[in-house]
View 1 (tube, helix red, strand yellow):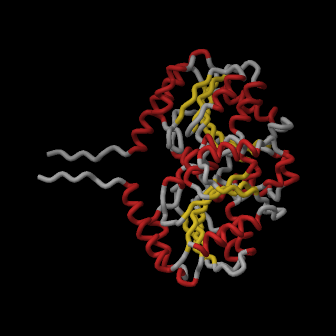
View 2 (tube, rainbow over the protein chains, first blue to last red):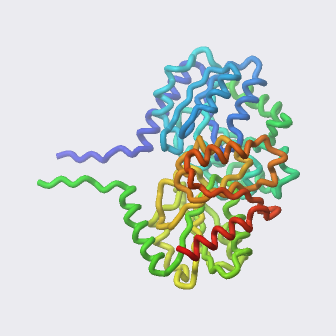
View 3 (spheres, one colour):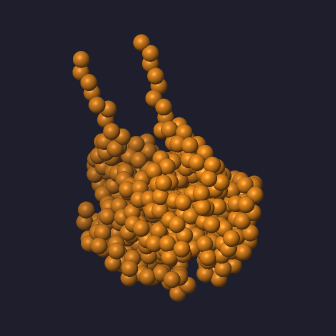
Length: 215
Length: 215
């Protein structure tokens, strides 16, 4: 008699993530898993990115528990987009991404954003086949977030500190956010951004283009 | 040969939640599971509540992935408090609560707040033995949250719409939040609150006292 230990869920996810990554590589596409808590401004960052990204062909996969608001917003920017509704699941997994890849013109894209479910915890634990992870934090969420939600800061290549136009109306210590985030991840690239005033967006766009084109 | 189907995780959690609830009932204590996304202001609402709650004896269990900042803030208000660090887990479950109940003077309390991990998704799925759930939403998170994260709005008895002092600086449609939240849960009691100006806190305190004392 042979006894086989059941493969762990994370391993199954990892296997499909590798498969997705191979498909992305074959299509010559750079993939970013975009994560944040609810309402930090991921979709607004994407809208701005799509409007400013001259020369980059960008597609988007939208992940939400329910609804298609975000996909409609992306569609209005003229980008190819697929909406995933996870039902109850609090994060995207590699299998969900694999299921929708046929809906996107991968070979005609340079860059694919996978906008995860708004959740500062679980999305950081599940690879979906991305090249890098980028996170958004609204400064209205407060300066205690890096130390309370360390994994996402550790896993991300860049942090978009969003809604900095609100700084005068908040008791938020931006320097503490920077310091704690960098203590968790010294390689983290930090952009201070306002999608309202467009401050910081040129720096983000330069970095994004360089990452996409030199991959 | 008898084959037994493995009890589902949710059922195990439910069983322990019922046990917690019995302990709370025996102690004559009213219990609120306080939930929100990251940085909506749960701890600040608790600080204000502790300062304004004359006549109510309140204890707090703090849930975070990591760190003890929140418990320290509660302790400075003079309330008995226990910090749970979940490690990686994105929500509190009934077993975590059961484990720390011995640390609190339950019989000397009227009201226990269980401040969940900042997450707008999973905490709504796991009972911890509470009488009711209350959620906090920062208006800086935007007006699309009820339809994107329906379960928490459906499960909560009250919604604290927090940080309304920021309204002049945001493009947020408060009426849409109200309308969508009530369409999901017509019984939902909504408080518009600013912990900065203390607007709305008297109404919240009146409701809280009534709920606690008439239980």
